Length: 254
Ligand SMILES: NC(=O)C1=CN([C@@H]2O[C@H](COP(=O)(O)OP(=O)(O)OC[C@H]3O[C@@H](n4cnc5c(N)ncnc54)[C@H](O)[C@@H]3O)[C@@H](O)[C@H]2O)C=CC1
Ligand SMILES: CC/C=C\C[C@H](O)[C@H](O)/C=C/C=C/C=C\C=C\C(=O)C/C=C\CCC(=O)O
Image (cartoon, rainbow, N blue to C red; front, side, top):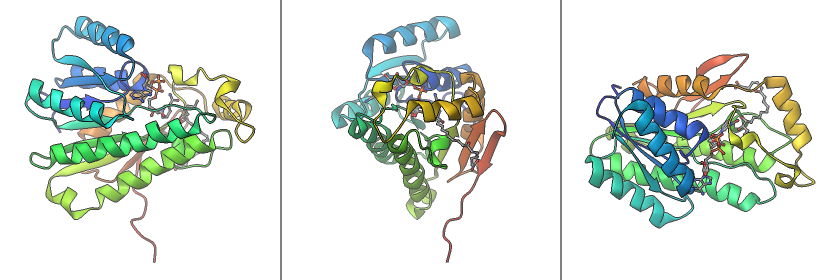
């Protein structure tokens, strides 16, 4: 897929990975709507990206992914501004085992809502939906069971949409990105983010074992996932020890 002139939406893009994905797409000629629930950081990042990349083809829209009206407005605003949508990156996510219900609302329900709206918008012209899961979407993580459940859910939901014949007929592609720990503010956790059935110490043991990647490394994998025309249903894992790997899990086992 050629990115020049394509229109993309990225949720949770005021900072961290979402911002890095937006930046990588703008650099390759895409027009990008960055959205976030944090208006101040979203506006600041938008201004910084415009200046750094010398472009007017990036805008910020306030969108809390738990609010259906915000989500609809983000799509409608993008269509008004750029004439349509080609790429949707459902990236917004949090790690908080204590406020676990919001973790489910943002990480799983937000991705489901974003995907359903994206499918509607892409059905006439085709396009790509990238849902951001995590390596915690494919392995159990003792330190963060709720976060892990949401990320497994993102993979199950995305793969199920990808095998829907209507999706193939509409020339839509869906894939998941599953990085290990990456240097973003999500790693600034305190004990307040955990319960007696989860643990920062346990999670931190995983961090120490796996290491922490730079956002640029993950953005490189993201662009690869986006450009590969033939990867509907793919799961891309990215880790310091195994690098970038694209995997296809079995559709069914009889
Ligand atoms: N950094 C890491 O180690 C990894 C992160 N991920 C996933 O990548 C995605 C991005 O995470 P990071 O950039 O690391 O985190 P981050 O904390 O740096 O950025 C997350 C962004 O999402 C926004 N956000 C939070 N709640 C929201 C809501 N209700 N509606 C809209 N936006 C909301 C925040 O304001 C923030 O700008 C998340 O889904 C996360 O689970 C996956 C694997 C590794
Ligand atoms: C504060 C936490 C915020 C974000 C966490 C991230 O989403 C992060 O990615 C979580 C990672 C937890 C990892 C725990 C264990 C990982 C184990 C392995 O990677 C084992 C190796 C292979 C995986 C199997 C595969 O490649 O299919």
